[in-house]
Image (cartoon, rainbow, N blue to C red; front, side):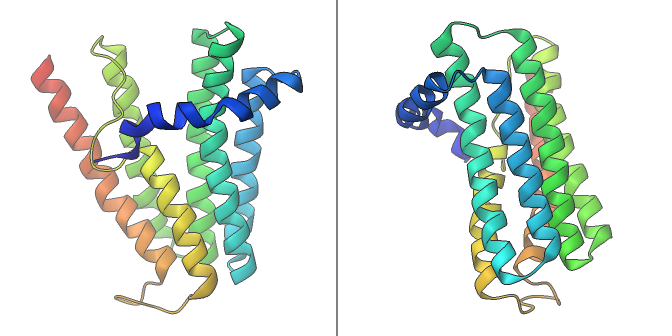
Length: 200
């Protein structure tokens, strides 16, 4: 189960944000860029690895996820939704994913674990767009989608701000998050692949 199935609920809460962006004369592409810069700020905060910075990083990650919904809603509101905007959004989302996981990795110095996590995340996203490319439709499902991942990082960052000691196998909250993304990310990619293979 993923949070992506609740997009319709989130869409109903986006109104004030879309209106504010429209009043500021922002384009959807500009909102996408702002969302990416917020993710980079989160990565920088996580890389510091201290309590206050974990909390700040968590807030930035949650804001990044919300702005990632705002850009699409703004495009629909302004009647300018386009393949180019969707393409830019997906590219910036992937760079944001790499930045945030890189920041988490640097904060605890677990580079092998970070590599496994970021490849799991990237392959999950790649399978979603590749499934779309072969004509089945964009795939957001699976064990762990981007919305779930951002929510977990947001909550995990808050927990890490309060408690940074090792919990299991020498891993603290951040290490456990990376391990989760490594394992479940690759499983989600496989799940998406198998589902698409059956459809094809």
